Amino acid sequence: MINFKKLSNKYDTPLYVYNFDEITKNYNELKNAFKARKSMLCYAVKANSNLSVLKHLAKLGSGCDCVSIGEVKRALLAGVDKYKIIFSGVGKKDSEIREALQKDILMLNLESEEEMLRVEKIAKELDKNARISIRVNPDIDPKTHPYISTGLHENKFGVDIDTAKKMYLYANKSKNLTPIGIHYHIGSQIVKALPFKEAALVMGNLLRSLKAANIDIKFFDIGGGVGIKYKDEITISLYDYAQNIFEALKNEDVTIVCEPGRYMVGNCGYLLTKVLYEKANDKKRFVIVDAGMNDLVRPSLYQAYHDFEVIGANDDEKSLADIVGPICESGDFLAKDRQMPKTKHDDLIVIKSAGAYGFTMSSNYNTRCKVAEIALEDGKDRLIRRRENFEDLIELEKEYI
Ligand SMILES: *Cc1c(COP(=O)(O)O)cnc(C)c1O
Image 1 (cartoon, protein in one colour):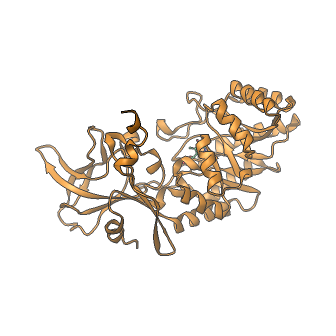
Image 2: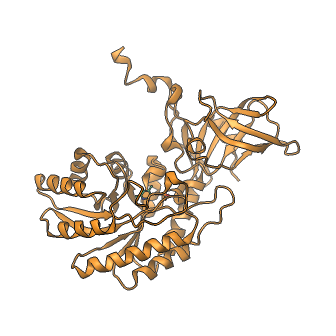
Image 3: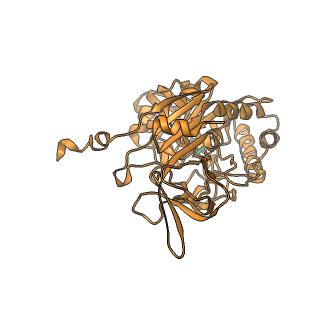
């Protein structure tokens, strides 16, 4: 049991708390599911990019999937092996491509024909050979929230199969491009095995047709998207997930790359917040807390559900309430229409499953300082990002006033 009260007294609130021992457990469980084949886990940095989280994963042997040069640099700084770093993303700038090639990471994951030509041109200027993969959009419906579905033709990601084939043939002939990977990622928070299986079958067929055309694909990158339990979801079996991939691959000799983000860190994280006030009118009861949508945007952005606990509350007298933040937006809520005990000033609320897409999506809206982050490991707590202060926020403006 984590002593949240003690942590909130020591570090103040709002506060992000990550249990590193749980991250280790998740890493090992997923790695184990793939143990019958060559595999590499490339953690999706965008889920939680704190340097200490990345360093912890690097020590376990993890690689990283990055979507900006900033994330690539974080991964390298945290000690991730450069040959385990993949750079994805639909809109890479020339400067980002150049820097990624100079840093000699494992591969760039291309998302359009035009991008391929840009990468070829920049690689030529640098007299380099760019290792690439191509992100294919297999047109599979992941049955998740539309904002986090990515593998349908109506989504902006990747290219369709015919375009991909054309691109592979072109890249294979180019002096400055070497296609080594094939990539897809159909969406996030997927809790059904079928979409993963369907996508793997489509992509397994593509892999074989590329190999038949003498394109030496070494990495079969299945993306991320494995869902976690936020409320009452029945999540997929990792064993079945891996078996479906093995079946789709048949005997092809490739390294399976998996890019878990949410799965790796989501349920390892908590957002601690304190009650400021309660108020009610004839329609609604509001519990106003010191964390807002700028600290955790998922409820506002995706209507996401987060479980929570009011520490030390008397559970007898529950009634419906919204947990809302101090931000000047009606969309500023952390929970809506939920049974809650009566609270008072300074009561502690622990928002659960906040380890992924929590801090990384936070902002300084309303000139609010980003909160501190701490790690729990082997029964000890330590600061891994200090709380911002007002000086930090005005630093880049004050000289121009
Ligand atoms: C976001 C993303 C991931 C991670 O998604 P999760 O749902 O957090 O596992 C993996 N790969 C790519 C290319 C992504 O864009």
